[in-house]
Length: 102
Image (cartoon, helix red, strand yellow):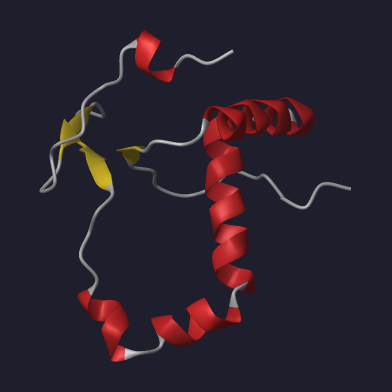
């Protein structure tokens, strides 16, 4: 039985991250196994980890958690539905060669 439950969810943002090539392959394989997208796998897997990590839950309740420097490059959708650079607008649309893997 799969550990992740994939269902329609809420509002999304786009973010560019770097992951190891073996992790990228596993994400694609898990997405095929679940008959969903790689985006859904990553989103749900991280939500699962965040919910299960008791130390992280304690951190979220601390005053420290309100003062974390944002390092994720997030692109907020604009009013017309296309992605635009947010306040941390160093993100760019990746070229196919930048995200391709075997």
